[in-house]
Image (cartoon, rainbow, N blue to C red; front, side):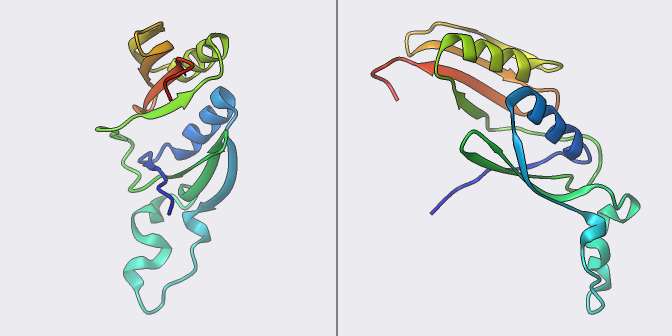
Length: 146
Protein backbone atom coordinates (compact mmCIF):
# COMPACT_ATOMS: atom_id res chain seq x y z
CA UNK A 1 0.00 0.00 0.00
CA UNK A 2 1.17 3.51 -0.73
CA UNK A 3 -0.04 6.89 0.53
CA UNK A 4 0.65 9.92 -1.67
CA UNK A 5 0.07 13.64 -1.27
CA UNK A 6 -2.36 15.32 -3.68
CA UNK A 7 -2.04 19.11 -3.67
CA UNK A 8 -4.79 21.39 -5.03
CA UNK A 9 -3.36 24.75 -6.13
CA UNK A 10 -6.72 26.37 -6.94
CA UNK A 11 -5.65 27.69 -10.33
CA UNK A 12 -1.87 28.03 -9.74
CA UNK A 13 -0.78 24.45 -10.45
CA UNK A 14 1.35 25.17 -13.52
CA UNK A 15 3.12 27.98 -11.67
CA UNK A 16 3.75 25.60 -8.75
CA UNK A 17 5.10 22.85 -11.01
CA UNK A 18 7.51 25.32 -12.63
CA UNK A 19 8.60 26.56 -9.19
CA UNK A 20 9.23 23.04 -7.86
CA UNK A 21 11.18 22.13 -10.98
CA UNK A 22 13.47 25.15 -10.50
CA UNK A 23 13.71 25.05 -6.69
CA UNK A 24 13.80 21.32 -5.99
CA UNK A 25 14.63 19.64 -9.29
CA UNK A 26 11.12 18.17 -9.51
CA UNK A 27 10.37 16.06 -12.57
CA UNK A 28 6.85 16.26 -14.00
CA UNK A 29 5.87 12.70 -14.91
CA UNK A 30 2.26 13.27 -16.03
CA UNK A 31 0.13 16.27 -16.95
CA UNK A 32 -3.47 16.45 -18.16
CA UNK A 33 -5.33 19.68 -18.79
CA UNK A 34 -9.09 20.07 -18.40
CA UNK A 35 -9.39 20.43 -22.18
CA UNK A 36 -7.98 16.89 -22.49
CA UNK A 37 -10.97 15.34 -20.69
CA UNK A 38 -13.22 13.35 -23.02
CA UNK A 39 -16.83 14.47 -23.59
CA UNK A 40 -19.37 13.08 -21.13
CA UNK A 41 -22.61 12.82 -23.16
CA UNK A 42 -24.40 10.82 -20.44
CA UNK A 43 -23.30 13.31 -17.75
CA UNK A 44 -23.40 16.87 -19.17
CA UNK A 45 -22.52 18.29 -15.76
CA UNK A 46 -19.12 16.58 -16.06
CA UNK A 47 -18.44 17.93 -19.56
CA UNK A 48 -14.85 19.17 -19.41
CA UNK A 49 -14.91 18.29 -15.68
CA UNK A 50 -17.08 21.18 -14.58
CA UNK A 51 -15.43 24.21 -12.93
CA UNK A 52 -12.48 24.41 -15.30
CA UNK A 53 -14.63 25.00 -18.40
CA UNK A 54 -13.86 28.72 -18.15
CA UNK A 55 -10.13 27.95 -18.62
CA UNK A 56 -9.49 24.66 -20.40
CA UNK A 57 -5.71 25.20 -20.10
CA UNK A 58 -5.79 24.69 -16.32
CA UNK A 59 -4.35 21.43 -15.01
CA UNK A 60 -6.83 18.69 -14.12
CA UNK A 61 -4.12 16.29 -12.93
CA UNK A 62 -0.36 16.24 -12.71
CA UNK A 63 2.18 13.95 -11.09
CA UNK A 64 5.70 14.99 -10.23
CA UNK A 65 8.67 13.47 -8.48
CA UNK A 66 10.99 15.08 -5.98
CA UNK A 67 13.78 12.61 -5.45
CA UNK A 68 12.00 9.27 -5.15
CA UNK A 69 8.71 10.72 -3.89
CA UNK A 70 5.72 11.02 -6.20
CA UNK A 71 3.33 13.92 -5.52
CA UNK A 72 0.11 14.62 -7.38
CA UNK A 73 -1.34 18.07 -8.09
CA UNK A 74 -4.26 19.86 -9.71
CA UNK A 75 -5.73 23.29 -10.24
CA UNK A 76 -8.86 21.97 -8.55
CA UNK A 77 -11.69 24.49 -8.54
CA UNK A 78 -9.53 27.32 -9.96
CA UNK A 79 -10.52 29.98 -7.44
CA UNK A 80 -6.99 31.37 -7.15
CA UNK A 81 -6.58 31.02 -3.38
CA UNK A 82 -4.97 27.71 -2.43
CA UNK A 83 -5.32 26.86 1.25
CA UNK A 84 -2.88 24.33 2.66
CA UNK A 85 -3.45 23.70 6.36
CA UNK A 86 -2.75 20.91 8.78
CA UNK A 87 0.25 19.27 7.11
CA UNK A 88 3.79 19.86 5.87
CA UNK A 89 5.97 18.05 3.38
CA UNK A 90 9.35 17.03 4.78
CA UNK A 91 12.60 16.81 2.84
CA UNK A 92 15.58 14.96 4.27
CA UNK A 93 18.83 16.45 3.03
CA UNK A 94 22.11 14.52 3.09
CA UNK A 95 24.10 17.38 4.63
CA UNK A 96 23.86 20.94 5.92
CA UNK A 97 24.94 22.57 2.64
CA UNK A 98 22.21 20.79 0.68
CA UNK A 99 19.67 21.57 3.40
CA UNK A 100 20.57 25.26 3.12
CA UNK A 101 20.22 25.17 -0.67
CA UNK A 102 16.82 23.44 -0.52
CA UNK A 103 15.51 25.62 2.31
CA UNK A 104 16.56 28.84 0.58
CA UNK A 105 15.02 27.73 -2.73
CA UNK A 106 11.69 26.56 -1.32
CA UNK A 107 11.38 29.64 0.94
CA UNK A 108 11.74 32.09 -1.96
CA UNK A 109 8.59 34.20 -1.98
CA UNK A 110 7.22 32.29 1.01
CA UNK A 111 7.36 32.68 4.79
CA UNK A 112 10.02 31.17 7.04
CA UNK A 113 8.43 29.87 10.23
CA UNK A 114 11.57 28.45 11.87
CA UNK A 115 15.00 29.33 10.46
CA UNK A 116 17.22 26.45 9.44
CA UNK A 117 19.67 25.49 12.18
CA UNK A 118 20.85 22.77 14.53
CA UNK A 119 18.42 21.30 17.07
CA UNK A 120 18.55 18.60 19.72
CA UNK A 121 17.01 16.15 17.20
CA UNK A 122 18.74 17.16 13.96
CA UNK A 123 22.03 18.43 12.63
CA UNK A 124 19.89 20.98 10.80
CA UNK A 125 16.14 21.64 10.72
CA UNK A 126 13.89 24.44 9.46
CA UNK A 127 10.23 25.08 8.69
CA UNK A 128 8.87 27.29 5.94
CA UNK A 129 5.80 27.82 3.77
CA UNK A 130 6.44 28.26 0.07
CA UNK A 131 4.86 31.00 -2.08
CA UNK A 132 1.73 28.85 -2.49
CA UNK A 133 1.29 28.26 1.23
CA UNK A 134 2.50 24.64 1.22
CA UNK A 135 4.36 23.87 4.45
CA UNK A 136 7.84 22.36 4.17
CA UNK A 137 10.27 21.01 6.73
CA UNK A 138 13.89 20.51 5.74
CA UNK A 139 15.98 18.24 7.94
CA UNK A 140 19.43 16.74 8.21
CA UNK A 141 18.84 14.09 10.85
CA UNK A 142 21.32 13.08 13.48
CA UNK A 143 23.13 9.86 12.49
CA UNK A 144 21.27 7.71 15.02
CA UNK A 145 17.78 9.25 14.60
CA UNK A 146 15.69 8.41 11.50
